[in-house]
Amino acid sequence: MSKKPKRVYLDSMIFIFGRLEECNSRLVLFLAQLGEFEVVTSELVIEEVERFFRENFGRQAGYVSRRFVEELSSRIVRRNEIKIEMNELRGKIKAKDLENVAAVRHENLEYLVAYDEDYEEAEIKEYITPKEFVKLFRLKPYDMEY
Picture 1 (cartoon, rainbow, N blue to C red):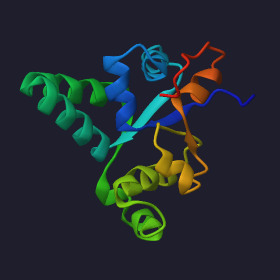
Picture 2: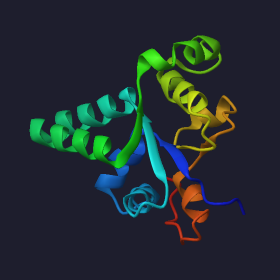
Picture 3: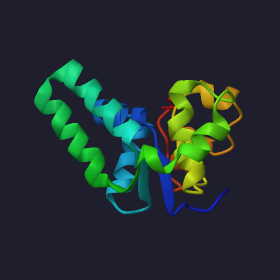
């Protein structure tokens, strides 16, 4: 079993499912809130989380969700910082995942925690599901992968 990571990139779905359901994504957020690891994310994740909650639950929910992501994150990778990595990855992975993988590579992170088969198909070595991630902390995961 691998050692506990110090810094981890969390995809938007971790914040979305982690706030809505009893699932492994919620356990990931709980570990982050306890300070078990530092959260790294990007402008894209903040925008996606805010948009999801705003469209489904209203403007205030969008704002609160955005603030939650910003406050939990120790580092927010800006688009202008990852232009080189994005150009190197363009065409190798789907456009919707490009910014996330570029941010992970830019920050030299071991883990990109998400539930997205596209990362697996693109053979992104940093990709790990929430279920596998919580096992690194010796927690009993929920049955679902996310």
